[in-house]
Image (cartoon, rainbow, N blue to C red):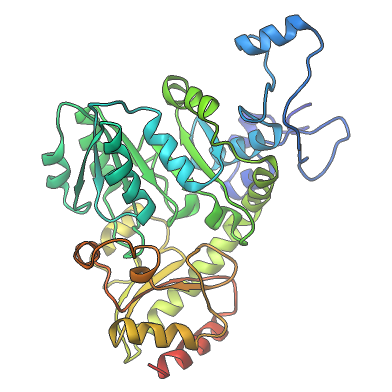
Length: 402
C-alpha cells in the first residue's frame, strides 16, 4: 500500500487547506482506487511469527488491531492533522470520547484542572463530576477573565480546558492569552474547537497544546455518524494518549472514519456557505421586534468583536438569540418553524434549532444557567445549506406567532 501516487506527504503539506482536504493522507491499495478504501476488519495477519513480534514491539510499521488503528482511520487522522497543523491526530468514537480521553490520559489523583465555566453540558459533567471521583480537583472560572485563570493556578494544576466560541452563548475566550498563562504554570491547554471548526480557528497556532473535536458536527456535516478526534504533538501522543486509547478502547469504527474522511473534502465549501447565511440571518434577526439580543461573533455589537476578528477567520455557522416571552415565546417560535427543524445537533447541512435551557443544559440549576448566560428565551440556531431566503421566510413567519 502506498501514499498518494505523485504527491509526497511533504508536498501535500505545502498545499492550500482546500487541496489538502481532498488529497491528504491517501493510502491506495494495489487496485489504485479513486475514492479512499473502507477497510472493515477487526484484525490483521502477519507473514511470519517474527513479523508479528516486530509489529508488537513497534519495530515493524503496520497495523495490529483495529482498536489500536485501522487504514481508513489512519487516512482520516492524517488528513485532519494536515488541516489543523498538528503533528498527529487520533480518532475516537465520539466527540465526548475525545474530550474525556484528552483529559484522563494525562491526569491522576491529586492533580488539578482549571476550566472555563461556559461549556457544553457533557463537558461540564466530566469536569465537575467525573474527574473529582478519581481525586482530580477542578476549578471553574469566567473564561473571559484572564485574572481568574491566573488566580486559579495551583502548584498541582496540570490542565486548562476551554471551548471558544462557547456553547450556546458564543462567548469567546482569548486562547493566546490563556495559553501564555497555562505555559507559565506548566499546564496543558486543551481547546474544544467544534464551534469554530478548523476552517475558522487554529488553536494550536494560538498556543494550545491539544485540540479536540466532535467530528459528528461540521466534519461529517450531514447527520450520519458519530466520531471525535484529538490533535496534538508526537510527544503528547507518546507520553499520554496512545497507551490510554489502546488500553481503554474508545476507537472510531472504520465506517465512521470513512464518512468523516469524505466529509473533510467538502468542509471548506459547507462552512463558507453556512457562514455567509448565518451572517445574513444574524443581521436580519437584529431588526426583528420579537427578538432581543442577537449573538454572533462577527457582528460589531458582539462584546468581544475585536477578539473574534483577531482570533477567528469568520463568525461561524451558529447564531444565538433571545426570543420575547421567555420559554413560552421560544417554544411558540420553535413549534412554528417548518424548514428549520428542532434538534440538539449542530453543524449539519440542514438548519437546526434548539432551546438550550431545556435540552443541552437542562440538568443545570436555573442559577447555574444564568451564570453561564443561558436564559429561558435563548435559542441556538445552527445554519445549514438551505437558501438564505427560504430560511429567512421561515424564521420571520415563525416569529410572527410569538
